[in-house]
Image (tube, rainbow, N blue to C red; front, side):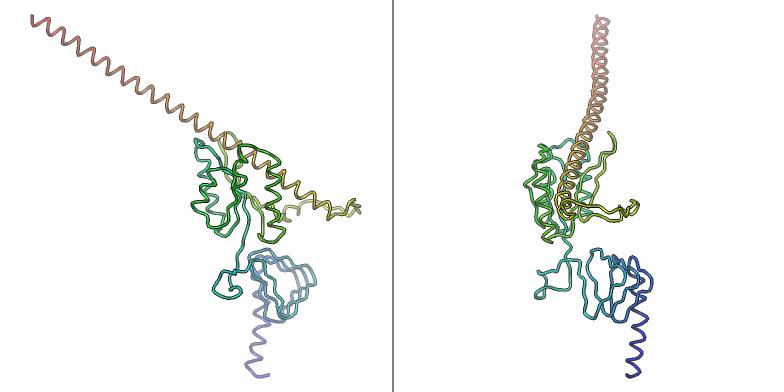
Length: 304
């Protein structure tokens, strides 16, 4: 091996371990890197991992446990390829498609309710994302601004609040997730804080964030499932999503009505204040006209 080759090998033994440890979100002890390897900032590595060539790309979360070993040419991709790029079959870019359930209103006169939802949409939703729009205001907004697929089959759900329609909605979005057409299922709704405060929120329904269970105590008791755990989850997850989506839908409708009540109450107060001001001006004008008329009569009498 020549001097240059030995220098490159020495550089690789120092550079790639440093790069992995500095880029990864979490890195366990005794991680060995023996070849050109790359990770993402969403990569979590366990202890005693060995990489002799590894390429990780995309914007998804990667979790690798203890004692993992990879050989040259190993790849982990967490995003969709861009088949509509300039190369065949796909270019170097990735598409991170998600599906969003967006709840807006179908009626107006509800203050800044829809404007706040639209602001949240502009910050969260990408052009290639799938959108399931609930509410005619949001549907019209997406038709003007969104370039990706829009489903309007459930646009009137905020008026009917039909649970069977929620079941169909959940099945439709979970089919996209199961078929790996999207990377996650999210919902944008308006959280009801109190009668005067309501704010839009974006919640990820699937995949479930495992960090939420870190503080839950897990027992080592042996549990027998009947039927199997897989069958239980197959039934439990759709039921969970149906209940959560329906709860967010009801909360959004509550926020909409509260916003409308506040807006109408402010409009009524402004109308009453305006009425008082106009009445005062009317009385002033009327009194002025009477005074002028009396003055003219007195002046005419004195002239005689």
